[in-house]
Image (cartoon, helix red, strand yellow):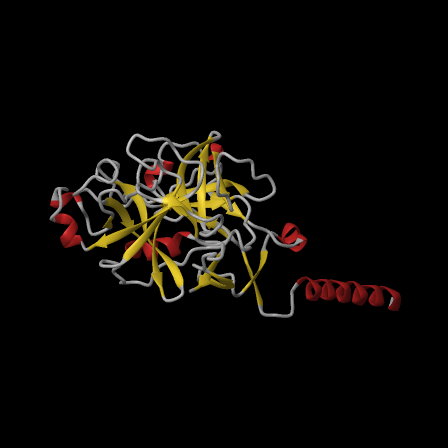
Length: 327
């Protein structure tokens, strides 16, 4: 009888020790973690649910052990954003220096250059909604750390498949209103000198009156060839009132858009989805996303961009994984 009692106590002790070892010292909570597609998202993944398990413990008991910091709130990382490397479709533009803008990405579809994008954190890039319309997710690749798309850069550039496409549900292909999308990378990227995120703008900031920088692999002239090297151009940013007085119909320019560019300096075909950058203190922020326009660099028809400040809540609500880098 005493032997049976001892064995029973020993079994209980082993179970208690197993539980203690399985839970880290810092405050963790048990939680069934099933992530559903946000109401504003369009998921092209094979399943509408994403289940993540961290420990063998979860496989046994059917629950996840997750850190308190891993909530729906943004996780702030030690990474820095918007820092260009200074040392070293752009009409009227010039080739930029290699890796000067380490957040700029190329979207390749079925092996061919398709659009631009920008890295927001280690898990997500941001682009234009029209860039991912009617695309098969499995054929999309995101390339970071690249400079010349016609030169083999094996071992330098970083390529990722896409696990989720999140396109704004109110995107209108006729007006290009709400032209914004997020792509979740199948595997997070590691930050380096050649791969770093861009800063999001502060809420309510209007870049009108500033000089912006548009960056991309788009055509350097209307109807011209796609350049091999990444291009950049300086463009003036107009207020909504100024833009609506130009050659566009006033009601064509919504509050969700930004106008920038002048004759000879503009974004062009192939730049779609790329960033319009503005300087804030010692960092760069993504004020706009290349969206649409009439021709390239035509007087009176500046390029039209998605106004990022109008979508900050949408961006944070849909970036369920990854970090928010301090700016």
